[in-house]
Length: 210
Length: 214
Image (cartoon, rainbow over all chains, first blue to last red; front, side):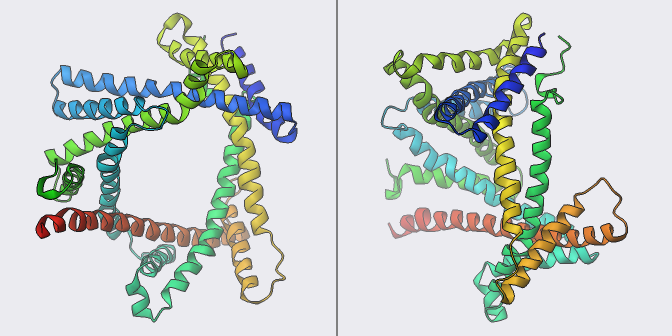
C-alpha cells in the first residue's frame, strides 16, 4: 500500500506528458503546463533539504571546535549574507547588494576556481598522455591540433593551415563520435525512464520495506 | 569608499582572485577562506535565484495578489507536495514523502523520455542519415560522419563479444572516440586558459594599472 500508491502515481503522472505530446489539445496542453509549473515549485521546496544538511554539519563542526572550524563560520556567513539579499529582492528584481556580491565575489571566485583547473588538468595530462599505442597517439594529436588551432601561434607556425584542420576535427569526427555517444546515452536513459514509469525501477522510493 | 580611487568591489574581487591563485604555491589559509566563502555564497546565490525566479513569480505573488482568481488557489497543491518532502524526517508519516517524490519523479521521467526520444535520438539520427547527393568533398565528410556514428554505436554494443567484423568496426569507433576525447580535452583546456587570461587581465588592467597611474 505504502509503495503501491506512489508507484501508481508515478505511472499516471509519468504517462501524462507522453499523452500530452501525442494529443496536443488545448485542455491537455494547459494541464501539462500547469503540472510543469507546479513541479518546478515542488523542486524548489527540496532545496532547503540540502541547505539544512550543510548548515547543520557546519554548525556541529563549529560547536565541537573541530580543525578548520573557522572556515565553517566563513561558509555559513557567506551563505546567510547571499541568501538574505537573494530573498530580499523586490518587484523590480534582484536586490542591488545581491548583484553587487555576485559581480564582485561569486563571479570572480568561480572564474578563478575554474581557471585554476587549467594548471591541474594540464599537469595531469602531461603525466597521463603518452603515445603508448595508436589510440593514445590519436587522442594526443587531436588535443594538440585543437589547442594550437585556437591560438594565433598555431596558424603562424603552419601558415594558416591549423585552424581549418582544427575546425574539421571539431565538426566532423568529433561531431560523429558525440552523436554516437548522445544516441547511446539517450537510448540508455529512455530505457531507464520506461522502467521507472512501469514500476520496475523503484530505488527512488528508498529501501524501506513499509 | 575607494582606496587609491579604486572601488571597494574591485579590491574584494582582486583579493579573492589572489587568494584562489595562491593555491598554485600550496594549500594555505587564504585559499581555504576563499574556497569556503565560494561554497557558501554559491549556495546563497542559488537560493536567491530559486526564490526570485521560481518561488516568487510562480507561487508567492499569484497567491498573495489574487488567491481565488485564475485558479491560483490550486497552487496550494504543489505547496503541500513540497512540504510533504519533509515528512521523511517524521518516522510515523515518512512514507507520505514518497507520494511527493513519486509525482515529481514520474512527471519529469515522462517529460525527459519524450525529450530523449524526440530531441536526442530522432534528431541526431535525422542529421546523420542524409542523402550523399550533394557531391564534392561534403559527400565524403558525410560518409565520415555516418561511419563515425555507426562505429561508435557498435563500440557501445555490449551484447556480443567484440570479435571479427564487430571487433574491427568497434576499433574504428575507438579511434573516433579518441579524436573526440582529444578534441574535447583541448577545447576544455583552452576554455580554462581563456578564463585565466580574463582573471590576469582584470588584475593588471582593472586593479594594478589604475593604482600605479593614480
